Length: 124
Length: 144
Image (tube, rainbow over all chains, first blue to last red; front, side, top):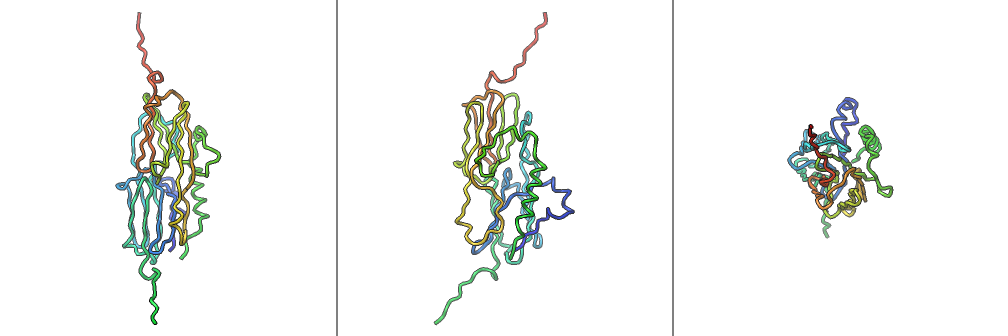
């Protein structure tokens, strides 16, 4: 399984300011890979996950709120979250599932049948 | 099956972080013993109240502590990693775990008993109404 960071490509440099790269953890389990991404401010309805060919794109739109008054401190970025991964054939892309809870996105990417560990019955 | 090394990714993140460094950042305190997680804060003020918003994705309600004392709001807590789930292979590990603490000194008096905190979509939203005395007052000028 390989990932490609589109943000590292020169032609994407100009758009870097327009989106925030969410930090991710990715690990492997027996049946699937699991990806977690921090996307505070994103709800289920403002999340877009698309698969096009072998490209998995995660986009999270933040709620735009009008907060009255004066800004005393501004550390949060208002830009949308965006991150693109390349998924390889070891993943059954039709079986990918996602949920988001308190701004933490969890994706389960099941392994395709060929790469799952298989138990071989021993005869005799 | 390989994932690219973390090196380039980390550099990019630092670069982005630098771009967003604000001169105001020194305005809040960060505890020195904290293990590298500094949740992003926004602070707003209008004539009636202060609003503090902290990015705390993926926490449980009881892992977050909010205290208000002597004019200072402190948000602290701990995000625990679920190590036991990561037994096979780890490809990326960018999310912060561990303790965090942030303190905001509010410039005017706050009605402590009316401070409210709400946690939604991974953002902790704290409203701190000003005391009646601290609210700006319009003084009418009488003409004689």
